[in-house]
Amino acid sequence: MITSDKNKIIKDIIKLKQRKEREKAGIFYIEGERIISEIPCNVNIEKYVFSQSFYNNLKNKNIYNNAENIIVSDDVFKKISDTINPQGIMAICEIIKTDIKDIKIKEDSLFVILDRISDPGNMGTIIRTAEALGIDAIFISKGSVDIYNDKVIRATMGSIFHTNIVYDCDLSSLIEYLKNNKVNIVCTHLDGAVAPYEIDFKAKTAILIGNEANGVLEEYKNKADSLVKIPMLGKVESMNASISSAIIFYEALSQRLKG
Image 1 (cartoon, rainbow, N blue to C red):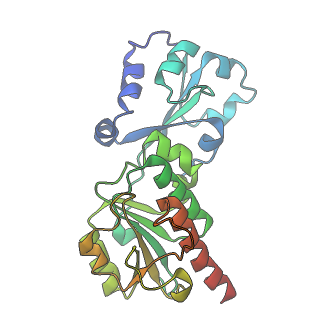
Image 2: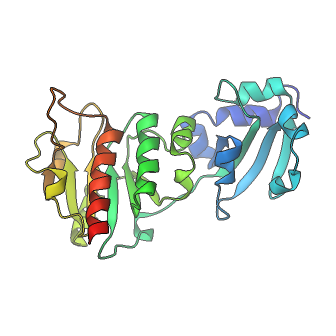
């Protein structure tokens, strides 16, 4: 059992709190028994880290025999954890890499493009909502919050493992690629002239959602086929990026379910 935070394994885990270290090592960590149970077979788990209390109370240790098991003192686990009251279990996994060309474009494909989303909670919620609504893939621009940020992962509640995500995209090239494949680009924007229910979401579509403070870059806005704005009756000018996304995703699902 590891009892010191000076141990190399512990130091290496603490480094993974930084994006550059995750990218350099090609690994990330997740915490919590439920979200770890969501990890699919195609994701390589390097090791599990348990607090002494959690491990001692674990009834079925065999479910974690697919990777190295490391036990640390409760105090050490608190130092590596990002939560106030850690459950006592962590998994170190290989980063999942998906290329744009890995995503098949079908006649009814529905994609999401995220332009510089910066808030971890927004990012995680959008990913979770996208999975719930059956989005085929999410494309995330350079300059967005890292999807392997612990707060993002927690907000996805496991959806990060069940959704096709291509990150660090060059959006200019991506939009050109999608348009060449006859995918309609629908951009959320305050200058939008149409409401979500006026868009034909039954066709293959990519929904472009911009940065929380500044919206979609003008360059990408100008390449969109439609600018959509959610009708609002109050004095509010705009809504949270994850709320706006959910409203539009549900409109797309509603149209598709109605046929």
